[in-house]
Amino acid sequence: MIKIAICDDRPEEAEAIQKLAQEFSESHPEYPLGTRIFSSPYDLLDCIGKSGGFDLYILDILMPHLDGIELARKIRERGEPAEILFLTISREYGVEAFTVQAAGYLVKPVKKEEFEKVFHACMDSLAPKDNPSLLLKTKYGIRKVPVRRIVMAESFNHRYVCMLADGTAIEVSDTLSSLYEQLHTYPGFFMPHRAYIVNLEYVNGLTSSELFMANGKNVPVSRKNYNDLKAAYMDYVF
Image: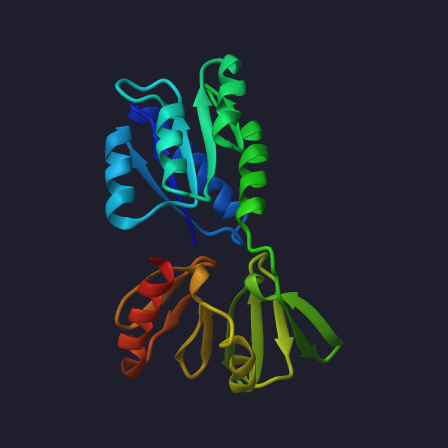
């Protein structure tokens, strides 16, 4: 999951950016996002100090006491490799934004088209550079699929199906156990039930009896696997 911090002293503007990010994630499920809003730069710095950094910072430039540029400098002083986007009311801050290796800036009020263009570039930059693929055997031949696009796999009525981030369902010849042998070598794959494999990247939440997937599916969790699943999920997310 890509962790995003939004810092703006105007709550309504921060919430508008959060909504745009959520809408982007819904239309691009291959980029699962977790967003958190901060109304004060000092609250953000305190959170980073206690819990670690974020993958992307969206910072308002004009804030009282500590402006967004100085906040970005403090983040960079920690050695943060994250992407930084600035929110501003004027393009005159554009040059200064690049002194802290910012990915870009967005002029308020932020338009959805402009947000998605700049935001998508950040997501591509944050995506793993090594993108391994899996060769899936189907009745139509071999299909090459990027591992990170696999949301889950399930078994029912002696059929084995892989579901991808774009909604594609691929019926495969391999058994679920054979698929898991290949997938469990990559971070984030878990078998919560004998009939399912899930990619924790696409898990929105869990209870002791089921997982809530980003594609809208609910996956059962066997009682014996719950504790291991919960620990794996918490390790993966945090």
